[in-house]
Structures are given as structure tokens and as C-alpha cells.
Length: 135
Image (cartoon, rainbow, N blue to C red; front, top):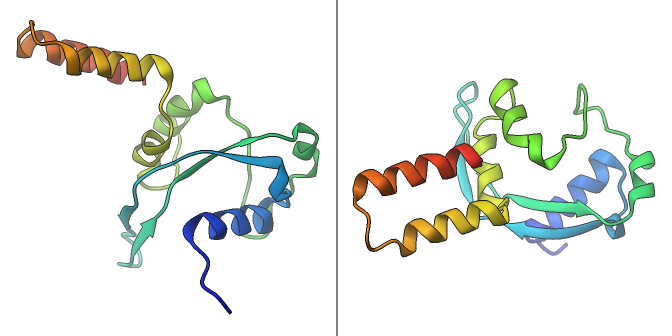
């Protein structure tokens, strides 16, 4: 048996836990590995974040979660951060989301901060806070 990489494992898990066929998903982005410490067990996990989009919308009807899940729901992309902040979600989910989701407006705001060689720290800090609020 050969070892699978993180992407192959993620696709396999998605298939097992949702019954979505692999051709219904397209990889949008992947983020750097994140070490997450589980407080209850004391274990540390290496999380490989991936962001997928559905390419086959009829597959939505086929989604059926397995025994590992109590519930599931679809969250519109513009509501994900609010959902994470207001619910008891997976530990470090916001950081994980921000490692893979890079909306164009946020990218432009970050580029503006990076390229700003005129303004001082106060203005740059204000721009950074606005960018984070936009996220």
C-alpha cells in the first residue's frame, strides 16, 4: 500500500464523509500546514487546509454525511467568517479559513498596505484594521 499525500487524503475523506464524487470538486487553494493542539486529548495534529468548490451542482443532492457528523449546512462564502465567529466551530477554524480563502478585495487592501511608502504606522495600522474587518 502506498502512502497518499494530504490532497489525496482530503479527497478520500470528503468522499467517505459526504459521498460526493471526486469529479464534483475542484481544488481552489491550499494553505500551509497548521499545527493544532487538541486540549481534551493533548494531541497535536498537522492540519493541511484545502479549499474546494463544487463543479457539479447536482451532486449537492447526493451529499449525505456519515456517522462522524451531528449536522451539516451550506454557508455562503460571504457569511463564513461570521458563522465561524458566532458558533462553536472546529478549533482554529478561522485561521485555517484565512489560510486558504483570499478574496480579491482583501488581497487588494493588503497590497495597498504593503506598497504604501508614504504613510506612517498609524495610517498603516488603520488600513490593516479595515482589511481585517473586511475579511
